[in-house]
Image 1: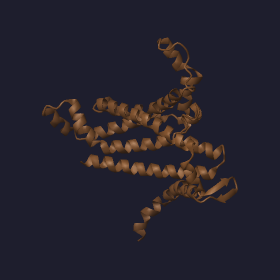
Image 2: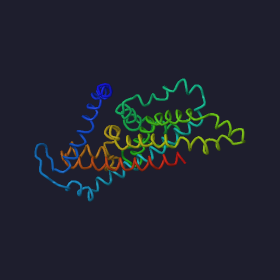
Image 3: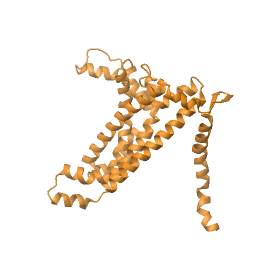
Image 4: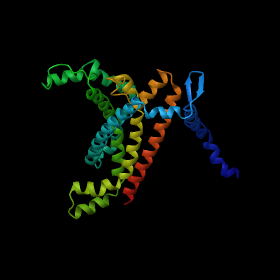
Length: 285
C-alpha cells in the first residue's frame, strides 16, 4: 500500500497548490455571488445578482463586444496560422528555428498593448505610414471610432497570438504520416487536394483544442483593453473581463461581479464541451 501511495504523495503538494489557487477562488466567487457585497457589508441576495444580468444592457453589450472582437481575431489567427503552416511544415528551416516563431508570445501582454497603443494612437505611427502611402489625408483618431478602436485590439491580439496557433498546426502536420501524402501524390492528387482532403481532416481535433485554448484566452482579454482603449468609445471595446473589473473594482459591487464571473465560467465550459465533441467526432470520422 505504501508503494502504491508513494506516487500520489509526490504529486500531492502540486495538486494542493493548484486546487488552492483555482478551486478555492471559484467556490468563493460562487458563494459571494449570492450576496450584495460592499466591502465588509454583506447582505443575502439569493438569485438577485443573476436576475439583474437579464436586464443589464451593459453586460450584454460587453458580451457582444467580446464575441465580435474575439470571433474576428480568432478567425484571422486561424486562417493566417493554418495557411503559413500548410506552406512551411515540410521546410527543414521551420523545424530548426521553430522557437523563433514564438517570439511575439514571449512579450508580456501589457508590453504588447503599450507598443500598439504607441503605434496606433500616441505615436500616430500607423497614421503617418498611411499618409506617406497616400491612403489618407490626415491623422486617424483610432479611439474615436468604434471599428477603428476595435481594430487596434484585434491587430494587437493577432500579432501576438497567431504564432501560438502556427506552432501547434505545424506540429500537427509534421506528426502526420508522410506516406499517406506520398500515396495520394502518386495517385495524381494535387497539393491543395491533399491538404483539404487528407491533412486538414486529420488535424481537426488538434485545431479544435487550439481554438478552444485561444478562445478562452480571448474571453479573458483584459490588458490590451485596459491599456489601449479603456473600453472607449462609449463602451464599444469593453470586453466581459474588463466589465467584471469595472463592476468589481470601480463600483465595488463584488457580489454582482462574482455572479458575472460564474455565468461566464458556465458559458465557457459549455461551449468548449460542445466544440470538443463536434470536432473530435469529425476527426474520428
